[in-house]
Amino acid sequence: MCVGSIMPDYTIFKKTFCDCCDTKKKGLCCIGLRDSRMIRDNSGFIDWEELLEERDAEVHDKKHCDCVYVNPEKNITFFIEQKQYLFVYENPLAEAHEKKLKNPAKFAQSLLNKFKNTKDVFIADGNDVNSYEFVFAYNLNEIDGKRTSTENIERLLRINYEAHFEAADIRWMDCKSAAKHVLYD
Image (cartoon, rainbow, N blue to C red; front, side, top):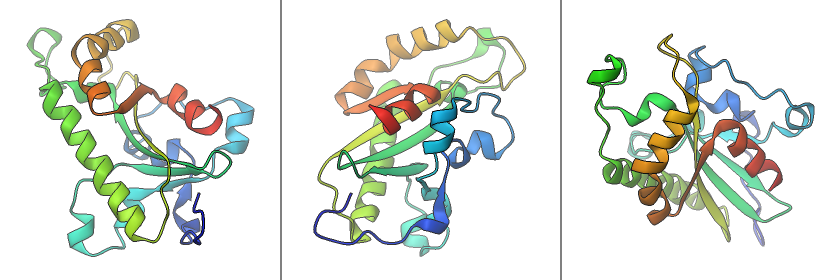
């Protein structure tokens, strides 16, 4: 949290991990966090998209991540981007044999830019960020109504994206693991 300064009051923008996610906002998420401990502890995520809607266009129009979570016990700030697994494709709704992967290096760089822009605004708001982590959380919902093997998607991520995420110092994991990591690890 903020050491030596007072964190701005983001209370009206605080939500659950899932409620900060566009997939959930669009009614397309069927995963949800059902662990009673997580439900109890899962309310301090700052919906960064909603917060930036109140800002000038110069700030709002820059790419930014979905939410921010400050863990005061561990003095760490998490900048979190949440995506549905189809993000890896240029043409996500095409038939399986026609799908084309996005350029992994460019995608990792675009994520890194979102995280850095969010961190800059967070610091400009008067927050101290002594320790931080960029977290990319992906969900494996069956958005297109077709059965997609979660193992295949995770293998696709490992093979094509992992090295780029690691080079950019981005932690990546499925949504449930990301929420647990941020709240408890």
